[in-house]
Each structure stands twice: as C-alpha cells, then as structure tokens.
Length: 315
Image (cartoon, rainbow, N blue to C red; front, side):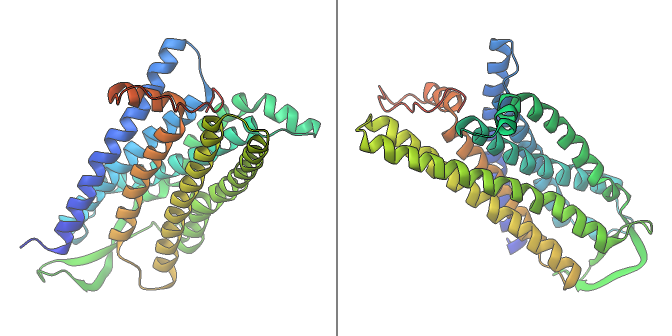
C-alpha cells in the first residue's frame, strides 16, 4: 500500500523538481551574465554559490531520504556511499546558509551609508573581501563535516525501533572514538545555524529599517509611485527570506539538539524542511534580483509591463 513514508518521498521528489529547476535557472542566468560581461560580479558570484549549494543540497536530500526509505540503516554494514552523501548534504547546506548571510552583508554594505572611516573603507573593499570569504566558507564547510565520512555501525548499536514490516531493525551510525560526539555536534550546529543567523539578522534588519525610512521620505517628497513600490517590494522579499532562513535553521537546531539530549525526532521533518528552504530561497532570489526577473519575464512574456523595479543596478 501507499504508506506515509511513500507519501513523504513523493513530496520530496516534487520539491526536488521545483527546487532544481529554479536554482539551475538562477545559476544559469548568473553564469551567462558573467560570461557576457567578462568580469566577476560579486553579487552574481554569491547568488551562484547559493544556487549551486541549493541544487546539491536538494539532490542529496532526496538521495538520503530514498536510501533511508530503502532501509540502508538496516544493513549489516553502513555503506561508504551513504557517508559521502551525508557529507555532501551537510557541506552544501552550510555553503548555502553562509552564502545567504554573505549576500545580506553585501546588500547591507551597498545600501547603507556610514560615517566611520573604517566602515567606509570596508564598504569600498567589500566585493574583494566577500569573494575571498566565499572560498574560505567552502573550504571550512568541507572540513567541518569530514568526521561524517568515518561513520560506521557499532557491534552493539542495535536500536529498539522496528520498521512497519518488522523485518528491519534500525541501526544508529556511530562516529569514530576520536570524536567527542556532544562537543562536535554542538560545534557544527553553531557553525551551521547560529553563526550565519547572527550575521543574517542584524544586516537584514538594518537594511529593512533603512529602506523603510527611505521609502517614507520618498512618499513625503511625492516621488514616483513605482519607485516607492519597488523599495517596499524589496523590504517584503527580505522579510520573507529572513523568515524562511530563520525557520529552517531553527528546525535544524531543534532536530540535532533533540537527537543529543532526547530520543530524537524523525529525519523526515528535516528533509522536508530543507527541501522547502531550497525552493523558497530560490524563488525569493529570483523575485528580488533585477537580472533574474528580467530573464524570467523574457521567458514568460505577459505583454508590456511598465511596473519595472528600479532599485539599484546591483540589486
């Protein structure tokens, strides 16, 4: 029969198609833009990192869910392929989360004005700094989750949970002895969720407050209606992205902390949450970026559209 596990797998497959299509579209537009301009645009590089990270994350999420559904955790030995997919899954999620945080830093530095000399110097060199930071983020993400490549089944790691067909006993993968599980899990949770969140929230809130104040001043000066609506749209999209980001990171933190200090939650919640994040963040990026919007309108024309967003050229 078509059980709950099959339904969750099908739901993840639908999100996989939507997420991969949207993220590959964003990645293709950004790469073609770089190729045509023969230059390296920081905003396009960051969006490319996010789109590529989301695509790998979405595919690895579906593969992981399919392997769990197929009963890999019931096998006598844990296959190394499962460890590799788990490593790729965590590394790509880290790259995506951190890249979204760096994108907000870039927008914040480009939009806001600063009086301090140090901040003005940082604003002028933010493009070069973020390009190096992205490479460092990729390397540290891979290093952080290397212990997952050494997961294995212990001799006495049988769990009391039994699947519906009563023929499969779920076994819990174990880290090697040189890894202190509690310290390591708390460390990578902070790296994966809390640290990007500490960057994402202040920069996003600062940008939203600035744009709202600027919009109010423009309304008082009777500025163009379309321009005012453009700023309001950017504020709404930023708030929506922050909400998706915050919800996803809280879900991940809840799952891993519960796994440490309690019996553990179902991984299906985590898989579906990450799949939704990939789709939602890709759609929000498409709506908030001028080049992506224009390319999407070119693919799906709806007649003459005069309500063109005129936020800054980089946005």
